[in-house]
Image (cartoon, rainbow, N blue to C red; front, side, top):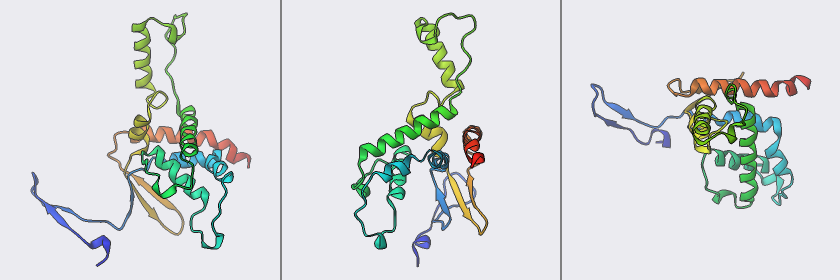
Length: 204
């Protein structure tokens, strides 16, 4: 009996049908939103630049994962809030966190969409009195949640989404949960990201 069929159990709370819980052999991820960061990283080459300055003492014939693969794994793990570094002690944690931070900053510049300035207001927003300044920041957070958002906001609204991966001979399809409340926002961010990198692809 393989690990994918090792257990199955039923629950019977509040429904007319039993709820069956079992493992699945499908490729499923809880971090489907990281695909957008991977796309941006491919365009900017941040992980490749960091891996290029590291010395790899391993035997190339016995190496399964390159340093680029390992850097990407940890950088994206930091973005998705997986702090464990035990498997990657050879990589400098501070450099990885800096790379993750820079990738987040660059993504923020791509998707930031601040609201229009307050009409007929001669002062910069930061110089306004406390009440109108607070109102401005509240309006910005509602209009542009990622541009002003903390990492936990990014994870909730862009990274932490259930994804099912299906691979055929022609393509890899990643299906995101249609019940995710931020799916439309994710689509808008994806459009902005693709539009921002398309000129570089077209010029090649």
